[in-house]
Length: 308
Image (tube, rainbow, N blue to C red; front, side, top):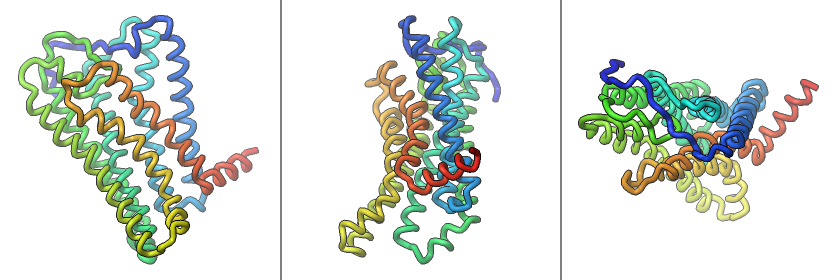
């Protein structure tokens, strides 16, 4: 990435300007980060170690836990550092790197959630063909494809953003580096960058979401005409509830951020929404899966009992 800018560092906006709240928020976000890492690491550990969870559904769940750990690690440590620092700066290279990994992991998670929806569709609607369609080799290929596509999607934004010229203010109106706040600081035309953000990132945000909804719509229609029983429909869909809750938690703030007009946004709204999908959602995902999934809870209990 060639640096064609006179700016060597950017200054990040604090989460709050109220000084008395800084230590309190530091403790809150530190605790949240610890719970996030511990919870997702526990899920990842039991998925890998417990042979009863060696199935496509839990293979993708392990990938989701890994993504959630990395996703919050992109923004939270720097946020925690800035709570204790008076000079809330990030280097140009550090800013571009943060932007890259934020979009890399976010787009990979978006695609992974769509793959997990497809897995539930095949499991319920094509049970006899499930072992063949969702073989271990196919699942690995899907997971690798998700990570690769996410990486190159983010690379597109990081390369294009790094080639912009920043010759004015270096104050980013956000608590981490993202494309939108950086475009506001750029000198010259940013039309191509804005088009890529709206078109490509919008596709990554909306496309997998509608594919996931389509999977669940097909599942509901299939079960309704297949079973003619509300109780059996409820039992079958109960295996999808956890995943659907995660989908809603992830997509709601993302869609709101990237679909709404930029002129109708405010710094406070952007920060709250960013905290939702970069901090809150990753810490809730393992809780949702463990509280609603008997197999994961059983694997966690077996793992704890073996170590006592």
